[in-house]
Image (cartoon, rainbow, N blue to C red; front, side, top):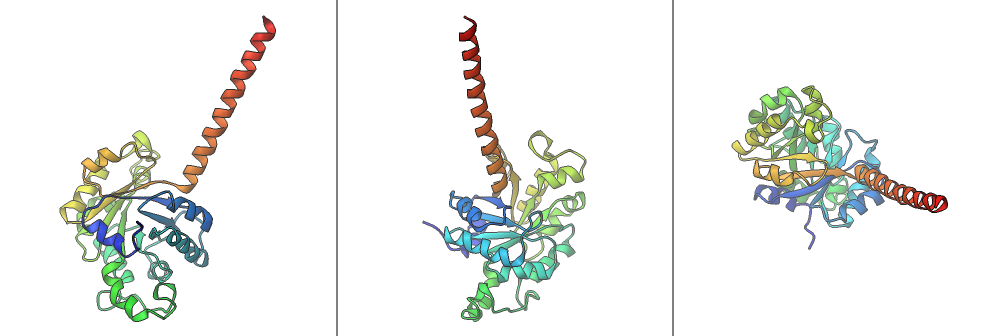
Length: 269
């Protein structure tokens, strides 16, 4: 049975392990197909994907068709970007570039209505185009999920202070970004900055927050669960497409090569 978007934050706070994935292709059909696979949520990426505000709302709708909530990774820690994602109906946001507690407080202000923050009331999609504005204003502060993305050495060092900021629900450790920042490579497979990631997870747990991280596949989920991770972003729609296409072509060429070899051997005999 699918759960409404409002449950996502509550599920994370009760300690349930959540599985999500990135949606990077700005097409509603792709989002719908990906969300219908059974993830607990999808995260629509606007940091590294060419997604406009108008298209973003359609992508959020596509996730909701499947009964899955959509987070949005905004492009930057700016109130107008955070507000646009939430006004469009996102269940929450992942905010990149959170390097300090001050950055975290800025993100909180952008996600919360007064008196807890400075988010402006807008009669858009999240409020049923003004039909449910009062209800939206009353519930949003308690239901929207705010995840701070830790992706730099400074953020790793300040992870505990970031997690301690009231209004931050979770930390998301970005292995790829951290690997690049630490000069450790691409952040996939053996190049993960394991100690940095573990310290972020521990910092979040020390402050009673959840911690999540990206993994290209499910192989190491058990390992990171043992270290205390609470949610995962597994791969991405584009990665699923390219890996499946590559595997299909490789398998077909292997069959063709084997057949050609057999024909050649038969002709020589």
